[in-house]
Length: 150
Image 1: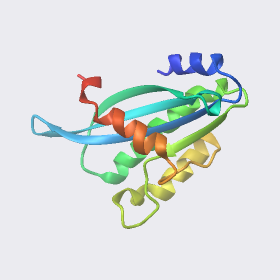
Image 2: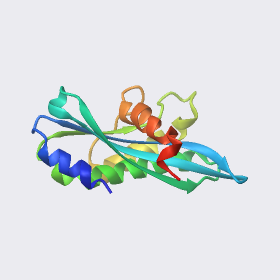
Image 3: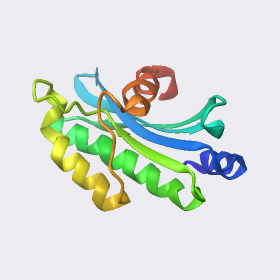
Image 4: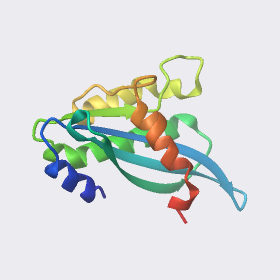
């Protein structure tokens, strides 16, 4: 799924960084609810010289359960990280989750499970808001671009 990202990582300098994230947007079509999930791999060239964004967008039925949707985002981000991790060769990688640690926000219902899932699958500590820009901004932008999905 992220073959071009892997090629770019291989061709990048060893001081580049990789950031992975996922966000979703709910929408209604023909009376049914769906979620558009946008997963991104961001390659920050030499960790100072701009970056490249690689995205994958999928649409799934949505049944209104916020915790399930948050965990789907975590699953997509974690899977993307697993796809690129073997090609890092020492480069830094972060997994960003669009989950707010403040209990006032709905996404908080999945915080503990999400952090545990990423740790179990990827053996790294995921970043959450406000430090999760790859999910909160880059993936969010891709999820809102309706033209990416027919």
